[in-house]
Image (cartoon, rainbow, N blue to C red):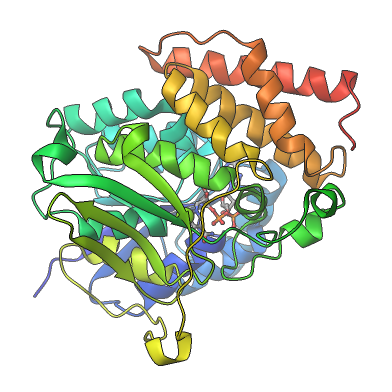
Length: 402
Ligand code: NAD
Ligand code: MG
């Protein structure tokens, strides 16, 4: 009999949060949910409280927290409602919790995810932005406090599965020591894979959020459409697997059946395949090193029939090149890239700037801010803050509409 695992799910009302609870609900004998968190979605959080009876429910928005508290009291549930960002760190560090799903979107997830690392938890990492921003600081905390980091991003989960079981990222030259010659990171190419530059000029938020293979939150959907998501994932792979920019190659694979591959020096290439369903990597990380049922449709290769591969187009999708550039520049550059992207995506979703202005804005912010070394979390946070100021100023002062 396996021990019961006690979970905190950061961002439980989002796409990854809901998929996580779906897997958890299939295995009540294995998992017990101790804390759920959301920004402001008190209705969904209330439903989740009824279903999973956590000890804590956290909301960032005060009005939403008050409403939830009233409904919890009315329903006679024994759930403590907490409010504010500090409460996220608290529930990520509870001594009774062994596993933290980090599924908040964007920089807002950084502090609670680091709190989980500092408390030596098993961290299931969906919140790639945290790793992109603070890679060195994050990985050092993981090592120092004996935390375990398991990737949820489907590509990184695939790479993790295709690497040797005893793979250690902490070794110098880990990939070479394991006989790995290259990591092949697959990309669907997003909804505009075959769009022309002039078509890209006209893209609306609704079109950008309609991904052909995956149903995701709005921010990551836009990131996939610009392919900046793949750029963030290159940086994520660098930190997770101790891989240089040169050792990570992006391959566009529109069917999203192969979730990524590892090429070895002997010519072998190991891949992980499956239908595009985030419950597969979530179940893998939850039960690791065991395997549990995830609710995913079994892969029917005869139905898929064809797997295509093409090179990424850095002209139509300059965000991908910018991410490689930021990774090579090192220091604060990835944090600046991430912050500029978050501001740009929010402005695009608000119809303040055009689709093609997203990478242009990131490029200008990167050019505006000198790269400095990252030694502490404060270095990361000040680069993030500076990039947001520059990005917002540029949006106000320049015509980014077209
Ligand atoms: P989402 O927008 O659907 O959900 C985000 C969650 O975070 C929600 O619960 C929301 O309430 C919470 N949240 C948002 N802003 C917050 C804030 N300021 N403070 C506290 N909580 C906040 O996003 P998602 O698609 O589930 O993505 C979550 C993370 O997982 C992202 O980093 C994304 O890149 C990554 N990811 C998602 C997928 C996917 O299929 N959705 C795949 C791979 C990686
Ligand atoms: Mg991914």
